[in-house]
Length: 275
Ligand SMILES: NC(=O)c1ccc[n+]([C@@H]2O[C@H](COP(=O)([O-])OP(=O)(O)OC[C@H]3O[C@@H](n4cnc5c(N)ncnc54)[C@H](O)[C@@H]3O)[C@@H](O)[C@H]2O)c1
Image (cartoon, rainbow, N blue to C red):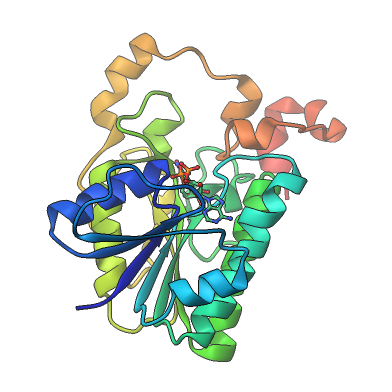
């Protein structure tokens, strides 16, 4: 059986992934900088900082696949992101290559392309357009994945995760939602897929209003959930979106600190004019 390690196991996504593996009775090596709650008999826990090269090398001994969820999931000041979202990635990739890991499944983010206009359909081959330092950190991670495949033969699947929530609660989520069930199905195909080198895929459910086209992906990912099922409820209950946030796929991450005077002066053409 493949040995799989889940980083960021104490986090929001990590907890859902742990429950999925436990239900499937698949053993899992779980790791986080803080202890996980309610460790089950099928789980082995290692607590430590992924910026620590010795810890990370030790963690990855005999591992087949790394599901890398650790990091800060928000646009924080660069000083806070540098360790978990930049340095830890380098430590992880270096250790994974040294320890002969087959594949890294990297939790990238839709914020790697968050400056594309809302409503535009983009695929996984478009140029990156990060919307924040957080989004730029995900681009850094994707670039490392690319480099470690090209130079060292270490495989990476980058998951540009949309909005991982139990149910969609905003108009933006009608396009970006990723259900718990679909994420777990996506991880299963990422673990099982035959050799595919480097790959990017959007982690998004089968939303009628999705902006993301996975046609170039070789993964047999077939999402089942559709945010549209919640559209009426969202229309009734969700507060109106901020107009600037609504212009970009990255929503509030894209709107934060936005100050292009030329584009603000011509708000009606803003999205089209951003090249
Ligand atoms: N939640 C979403 O909707 C979403 C969307 C896009 C991408 N992502 C990405 O998915 C991943 C998981 O997101 P989440 O919502 O579960 O975040 P989370 O904050 O709940 O979990 C992240 C975990 O990483 C751990 N961690 C942070 N720095 C670490 C380090 N140096 N060493 C070891 N562990 C460390 C934290 O303790 C935490 O438990 C993140 O990389 C995030 O950027 C999440």
